[in-house]
Image 1 (cartoon, rainbow, N blue to C red):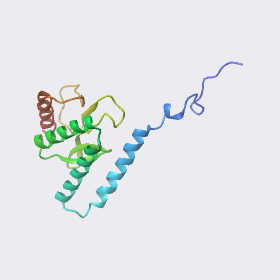
Image 2: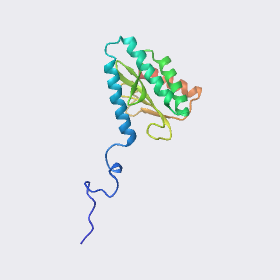
Image 3: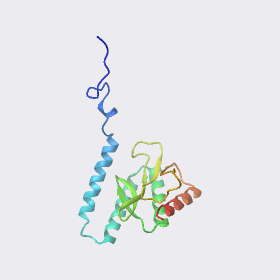
Image 4: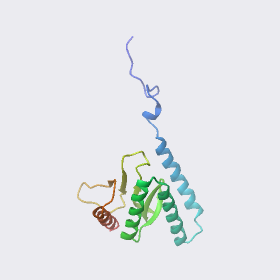
Amino acid sequence: MHATKPSAQTPDTPAEEHNGFTAEERAAMKAHAQEGKKAAARRGLSRAEKEAAAEQDVLAKIAEMPEADRVLAERIHAIVKAAALDLTPKLWYGMPAYARDGKVVCHFQSAQKFKSRYATLGFSDQAALDDGALWPTAYAVKELTAADEELISALVRKAVG
């Protein structure tokens, strides 16, 4: 007899290593579903009330973060709010995000979220950051200097046009 290659139906390692979602990804999807339920429950509120409630959700999520990520998220929250008055805070897959007309422009992902070694500031395709044929859409964030804060502010201003 000859040895056969394991099939997709009979992997030689646990299924989690081959396909499916990690526990962190499943948690993010559950958070996204909860966000949808909260949004539905707020349908009768005024726009200002919805935005205030969404910002409270973001601030609560930031407060839950480990200290290093919380400090970064608080600063980025303040920078984004100051740089782009037309962006509104909201939760997006359990992460603080900033949207225009309901569409996420940028978001903060704590290092703890997916057990990464650094937090990230990401931009969606709604962000007007296009620069030729290649440009970054996410930035690793380990600490924030005054120069870093100014760069983030400039990126956010550019992102919203």
